[in-house]
Image (cartoon, rainbow, N blue to C red; front, side, top):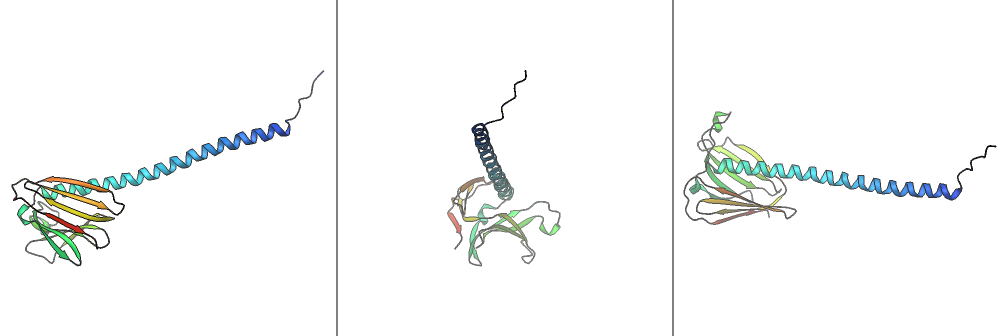
Length: 178
């Protein structure tokens, strides 16, 4: 004689649905947090890459700078660092050789490099180096330069640079947004 299987009781169905909902809650919470961490990590990679490119550009410029040419200037309400350096070979012959350069922290919080030939100040090239900058400090020492960049979120990074030639004991040059 066959016995009939009893259907699930209401309590068993409610318990199964409750356990399923708890498992799904933890699964989606885990997925949400991993997505958030992944997006934050991607933003940090981009930020780190831009700071690394900035430092590489600083090393490229200041390895060929004339340390005695470093000075502070005021242009359009923002402080800038003026220098003379050897740009070396460039695809545009106008920008090969000795150049005048300016690091400008504009009022938008962007650090811009502007270079132009010494004999032609009307021809210039601008390069956006970093964005979201609150202040830049230039510490000029005997044989080195230290750049401290503070972002608008108060994150600070210091970039040490050593001159290839001797320099007189220097001074602190500070550039900040208004």
